[in-house]
Length: 243
Image 1 (cartoon, rainbow, N blue to C red):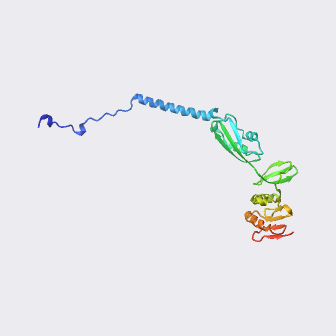
Image 2 (cartoon, rainbow, N blue to C red):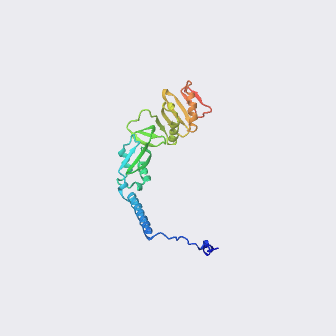
Image 3 (cartoon, one colour):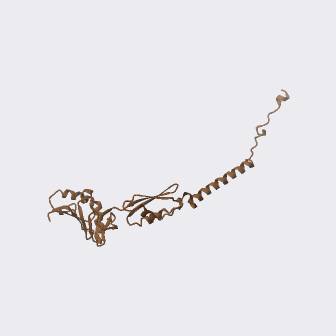
């Protein structure tokens, strides 16, 4: 075998390995500059959103009002123009608007670039209380929330002592619409003796507000019979009389 042929190839461990160099200084500097620029951009955006009027309130839009005006709601909300949307205290706005007696609830929404939307849920009257200073409207929670010179048409009159006030309202709101339309006066001295005076001189003795849906169903069946007084205070043993 010739000398050339006999030469041994270098062992694998002796072979040269490609050198691994770290990133160049220029690449490192470039990365640092990019990181600084990104941080500066983020900081600028945060500052613009939180501390400047760039994304501040420009318009307060009001929806859902019927008796109230949009200006009344805006005045109660007291949202200053230019207030950054991100820093708007939504809970405080809700609290201020709900101080309006006619407001049952309000939803606050923020819409870029500068709109605040207030959607108001006004109270709905279920009865009227006649007092010397006028007709007081009462909603489904029993709250007396507004006073008018004259009672609105179609609302029953509520004549209840404080002990029976809430029970009377609960019964009213639990009646089916066709029966509620016939109610003219609701009376209650306690929470267990609610009575409904209906059209044509009829009366339903309701008792407490318990089992109102069942009592309503029984009352509607009883009212198909002759009589003027329908007692459903014990729905298991209802009675009809001509008192």
